[in-house]
Amino acid sequence: MDVGRLTYREYAAFARMSSEELARDCEMQAFRASGPGGQGVNTTDSAVRVRHVPTGIVVVSREERSQLRNRERCIEKIREICRRRGRPPRPRKKTRVSAAQKRRRLEAKRARGQLKQLRRRVDGE
Image 1: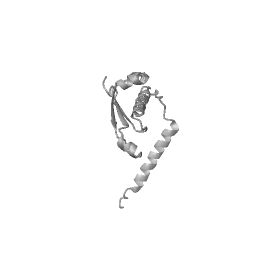
Image 2 (image 1 turned 180 degrees about the vertical axis):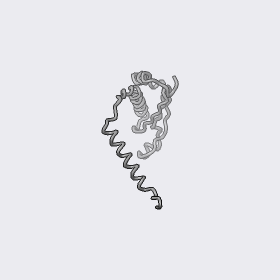
Image 3 (image 1 turned 90 degrees about the vertical axis):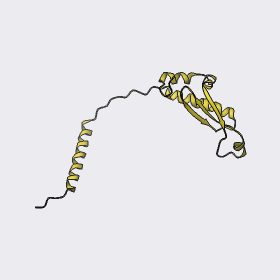
Image 4 (image 1 turned 60 degrees about the horizontal axis):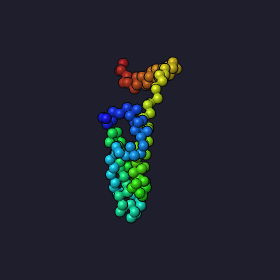
């Protein structure tokens, strides 16, 4: 699969996979989370960055104190992104510009033109 050129159906297929199947396609990296949390944050590699290789989606989770729970949360984030991308866009309905809107637009253009014409230098007589 070519990253960035996936179809809605392919994303939807990833969204339907189990957590274990999704995790098999991922590269996981643990690191130290920054921010509040004191010694617990400074000493443990509990934050997780997960990259889903087939789609190229990268997510980070540092909400939990447990690396395992952060991994699970990352997999859920990837599933949610795939679910959103798996939905085709709603078809666009063509609309017509009303006659009143056209008239207002032309009147505004005419008024603007007159304003600019009034700014011009008057020829000396």
